[in-house]
Length: 365
Image (cartoon, rainbow, N blue to C red; front, top):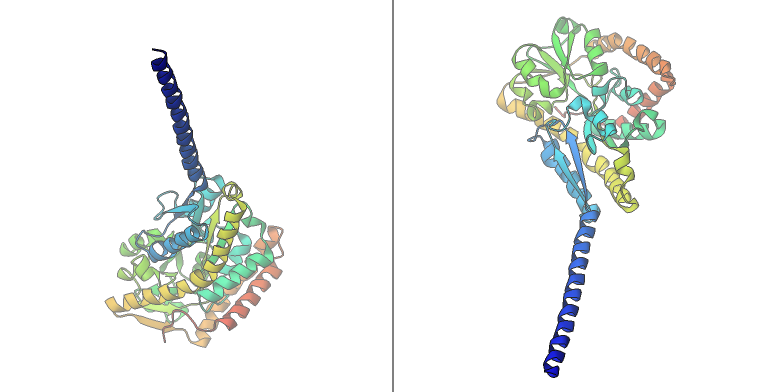
């Protein structure tokens, strides 16, 4: 009887020990799983381009993959295209307030909020292509270090380069543009359209197709990539007047400051390295290619005439735009900035990078 009880006792001790060991292992496994979860940083990225646009399918997806690779899978970014999280014009404010972690949109949709950056959009300053415009913009932001960009963490900025005037009727002189309702996404280019004698219709790009198809607008000034990316070639663009001095667009990819500051230092470093490489090697040349792609797409569907202004006619257009520069210098001065120095600095950067990248988009010749 005693031997039997002794065996039962020993068995109970062994069983209890096994339970403790298993419980410990289970606790460690659960702790390890939770640790793995803690190491995965999930971010959302909001933008306004359609889900079918190359910006989403190629550029943003590619960026997400590069971040994933650089952080060894620790950072997972989910993209939300077509304004599904925040509208285009509210993206920057959404990032500031933490409504979204990261946002990609257009500086000019927030007119007056970015006075230094908007100088790079000033009509009258000519850009050869997106590479010249992007590298000038990035150097300018570093040089001027504008206070306007410090309420979020700037990942990078890039530029579209020259936009052109596209219509259903030929525009060869200032007389041809008079009285037309022409689309302008925002800001200074809308003022420029007015100075040239047309009536600007200010709308974000996602609204253009409907306005053009309904005749609310008879054309617009924008990058030629919109012929394909936003399907505008279906409703306009029979005539394209090259106006590299009339339009430039600047974009931002930015992150909420608190979210950025919460990231481990090594993750911040990895993301920064991707940003620096991606903007130069991918973003800068990309707009050149899609502008040509948009033009080629339109030409494949209909007859398109590309018009180059004569030197004398171009001079007439530039003379009409000169008051805009003078007024913008005053605007900068009123904001406590040195307007003349900033405009001069932007022009010098344009000259520098146009010389470095002399080919002229959209490469029509």
